[in-house]
Length: 147
Image (cartoon, rainbow, N blue to C red; front, top):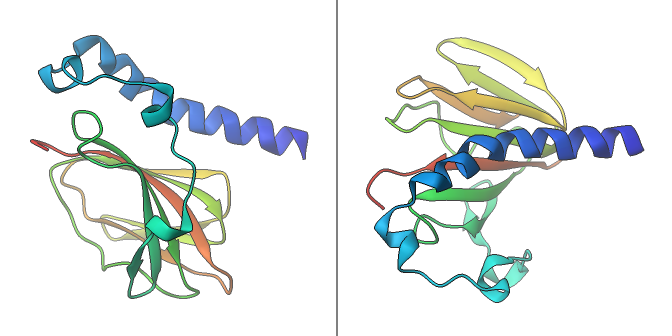
């Protein structure tokens, strides 16, 4: 169990290395915002979830918090998907916390469970769906252009 927790912390840490390095190139939006312990800590709050057709999503950091960088948790019912495979100019990461995910990237699929990350390069066709019989929970890390 301790090894799995260490692996989780290591994986999540890796997902944030590049975005944190980007802080050195701080935008005007960040320079003018005052950050405090109160607005920098976001604990999951059931009353702030956004319902979807297949579950819900919760924004830990929406595109207005920093310079377009976001952190969102999605929860998807068994055998569901938030949307079909798609593409966009921004790249993004997915990190599975619970359940079984089927990742789709440019015509190929791979199934994996908790503590698995999935990188979607810019303009690639990608998607994620719940391939299991329990709820799928995953994090989405993305930087939106021109927030």
